[in-house]
Image (cartoon, rainbow, N blue to C red; front, top):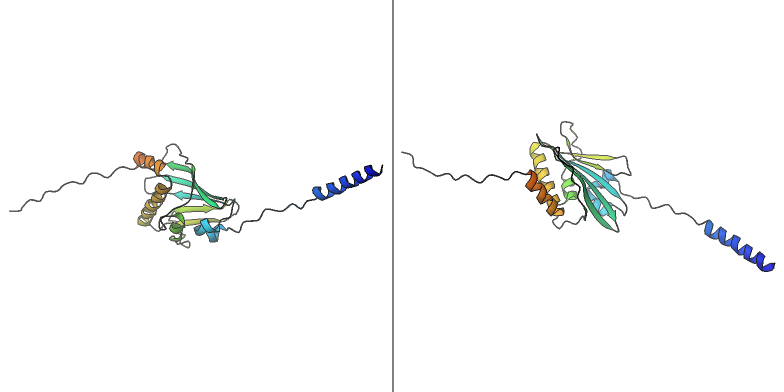
Amino acid sequence: MRNEKISLLILVFASLVFGCEQKTEPKKSEFKVAQDYSEFTTKMENNDTLNIGVVLSMCMWSEYDQLQITKSNDSVFLQLKEKRVMDDERAHFDKVVYELKNDSLNLEKMMTDFDINYQKEISSPFFVIINPKEKDTVLLRTTGLGNRGFNIERYQRIMFELYPKEMEKYRIEYIIPLPEPIEIKETEME
């Protein structure tokens, strides 16, 4: 009888100890899209996500990319979730590690070159940056057609660096090669 009481007491005590464990809340990320978007590789914490819409449309050309940047196991990954060109099928690319060797050829550097205060409605956004855990959205706009063309080319070079095979297929399919130069013969005037 005494052993039963001790066993029952141990069982009750064990139930209280193990059943009342403190549940710890996961650490809330300090990453804030409005202030940290251009330093995402260093400011993002594990399990953070950043969604970036890239509007590559210009004049009669319609193109849009949807990027997702995530941090996991202290590594930053980028995935081109969706590429829409004109009215063709949407393309989806695999997740890749975001490691670019050329300092001038990266998204963070590109984003810092935009004037975040330039918000004229006549200029469509180039980057639409959203952290799904926040309500903030950052719009980065180009300042004219020349600036837009320059940024489209810059962005495409970054994507070629990250997705060489996929972007080569895109280039062959959509980008018209430049014509061969025309040879001009000089003639003497009489």
